[in-house]
Amino acid sequence: MSRFRPIERVFTGPSPHWVGNGFHVSQYFPRGQGREFFDRFSPFILLDYNAPRYFEGTERMVGIGPHPHRGFETVTFAFAGKVEHGDNQGNHGVIEPGDVQWMTAGSGILHKEYHEKEYAKNGRVFHMIQLWVNLPAKDKMTDPRYQALLAEDMGKLELPDDGGEIIVYAGEVMGVKGPALTFSPMDIFKVTLNKEKEVTLNQPAEYNTGMLVIDGSFQLDEDKTIEAGDFVLFENLPGDILLKGESDQASAVFLSGEPLNEPVVAGGPFVMNTVEQLDQANNDYRNGLFGSHDF
Image (tube, rainbow, N blue to C red; front, side, top):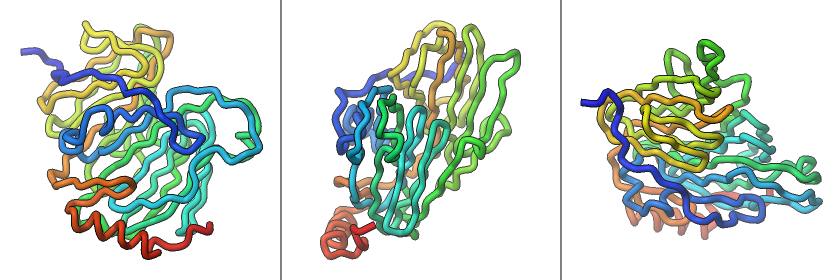
């Protein structure tokens, strides 16, 4: 029997589409894999990947205006560029490379996201991930919350022999903890390896685990090459994940979490457990219960 955790599939995202005028994203899931992926990769329910893209400078707002969410969390990772966030709960922040915005929509929130105004005035490369993390049924209607996680707050593990580093956003990896507060157990982290350097990772077999390569290329489990844009989904079986840098520098973001094992009913900006709850979310929004659009 191999000591490596089996790979279920390797896939890339569908053709990119625009979200507003500032995010040119490929939706790896669910659009790229089908709605059954809600169950297969719980608690992670959506991944939009804005691969590195050059934007011309402009005086206009670049992004997406006020829009609602309920029942889950939006997590935005900045690798290149600056994203500004504002919501009708009074939260505001700007993330730069290495930072993360973690917004809990909970019972309902309106927010907007855009390229930071001064940054948008000049030509720039933009590189981001937005991840949606489902909330357990008992926490669907929790109060909204905003976490601004700065690069200097992240858990950081320097790998031996100038091998690279692991940045921990949430959970714990090799004894290093991330700063994010989560509603269910999960480990979210970024691995960066220098050429010919290796690291062995091991996530709980019951956790749904996958990785998105965002830079360069790796050798995976001694015999597979994975490159920027590849998403690797692992089977729920025990085993090591062995990575070796093939390019001068290679980076991947790992998503690994305990599945919620609860029904998912999603429609547009709302993710609930029943059709009735989804209908209620739409009615509440139409009736102004999410609050003011003026923020």
